[in-house]
Length: 436
Ligand code: NAD
Image (cartoon, rainbow, N blue to C red; front, side, top):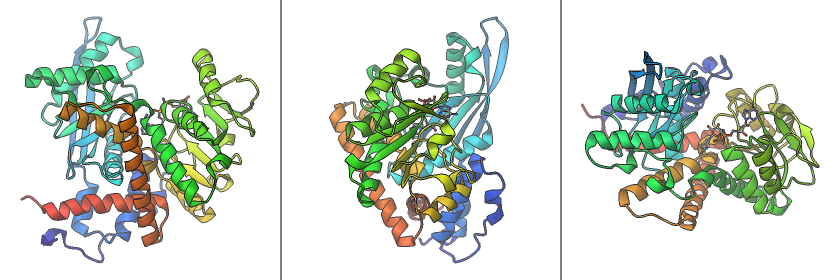
């Protein structure tokens, strides 16, 4: 507070309002427009605004590997640490041709706000390697992962930067990162990554964590809207890790799942879909298509079905200015990252739909990643019941705090969540002051 460079001021933040609507589907724009809105309402000091907008570190490395053919190929790797004022950077690593610095920057900032909403002692980071893993052998992927890790040795570490799986990376990739890092420092450091296999320090409950988090906040929202759980109807887009777990756990609590979908399309049954049977069907047939007794719906139709709760848990930018007005759900629980565009936000707000924003709704995953890091550092592992109990407590508390912020400032839940997160990160900066 005493630092003049971070003293509060009334003016100066002048985000160009029109910029937010230039491209409806750009992730960086989507995040920044919400950040700007929340920062303005918080009357954030201009100096702090500039600090929080700028990633701390943007690292671009060349990642040369020897292909199986004997040829040398050089890939580009990126790691961005957006903000580490509250703790080590936390965020996934993706292997994908679509990786760009702009996208990684946006996703890293997103992680800062997500970790702060649920009050974890983590900052935000994200990384990626521009490559097509589908054309690479296991050996090539291992060499790529190990060289990328070696190039990031300066920033990686359980106290500084802790990656996790993301698009096209998995437990095996995390194991390679952990091993490479451990070899370089001379001893085993399991806490350098999360999302590891259970046998090497992964946490019980991680697989279900994001879907379980969705369940917890959905129950909170139903209670606020006075919709009894056993009367609630739910449509879920996406039947992968997040969507299928959310559907399974919600059904087990007595909610009626009227529709689910995957990338080939969806199934709809107003009297309720038997989710365990649908999971069995998918195990055998890969897709929901053809599930007996249900009508088929397209992914677009699913979004506008009559239901109490809509859970977009597949992709970004599915709720847009084109379909938001047709949405009939009373609650939207954003299992996916960025499923709603900023333009759609305004329409949903007007309709009075209760949106549980992504940075709150899907924070169960990073919360159990935090538990994994805590368990690795303590060398003492919890049973699944303990993991789930602690997860529920954190998610419920965060929900209540976001509601409190939204009510206090008379804003929707999304801007309330951003305001809570920004306020927490800003508070840390004010207390720490500016190192110079
Ligand atoms: P996943 O790959 O396990 O599942 C994705 C699902 O979406 C699959 O059922 C797939 O068929 C479906 N899908 C793909 N394209 C589709 C399309 N065009 N229309 C409809 N459905 C489509 O992925 P996941 O881990 O469940 O992640 C889903 C979303 O949740 C992503 O946005 C991810 O970033 C976000 N998320 C995941 C976690 C986690 O812990 N897994 C945590 C936070 C956020």
